[in-house]
Image (cartoon, rainbow, N blue to C red):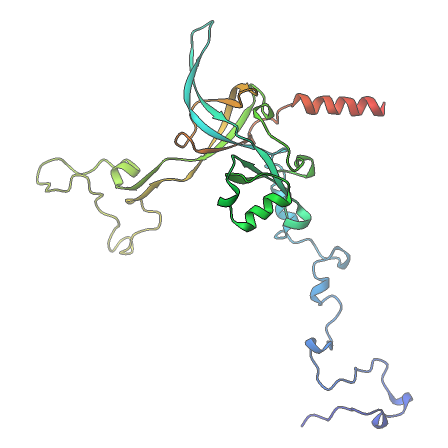
Length: 306
């Protein structure tokens, strides 16, 4: 039987008989009661701190941001509405260049995401307009708290650091991009619904004759028997839902910028039907564009310090 703990000061031995590190007089021992014999380094509050002499974990949020540092754009992107396709002709050579027209509709900065509060840097951008009575109260309060009118579409663009955070309420127009620069365009492609193997994956199909009976467009065998484990392997191409996924077209060249009409003309085709939302941001596989406004600000700052 365990010895009974001392609960009264009258039962204590003389002071000269007490040990140097006497345990606290508590009726119950445990971590939740404030009593522990673990060393200082073993406490969770001091785990993986630089002062403890331990290496920094590679699975920490700071390490994750450091790995993505070279792939994050320096500035935010914009939202546009795909209006359709047309073509531009070179007056000298007569070369026809197909292009996509994207329109900017009241694109504004709604809010920010910071590392201190959210763990990363991002800019929330909205475009379009909605009737206030058609917006839920939580989202309507979000717009009202930042002084921005209700938006039809809202998304966020990751940026590298605080220098890419624009002011809340600032308007982004087509002149945010320059003619000749490259951008990445993201949009949802056309949804085709449920499709068979021939339409979805381009299967050849079955023979048209020679004993084939009403199985001309079927997929065929979906898996091996004894040699393959008598199962269908993961990732097998089969009939299913087709389309309706986000498609990214990288390194799209900006052919023309019309700030007065709010139009941006991009080279080639962009995924999605007419009227879909297109997310446009500086291409990550091309050099960052030299924005004239930013260059002038740097020159002014250097001139002021000189």
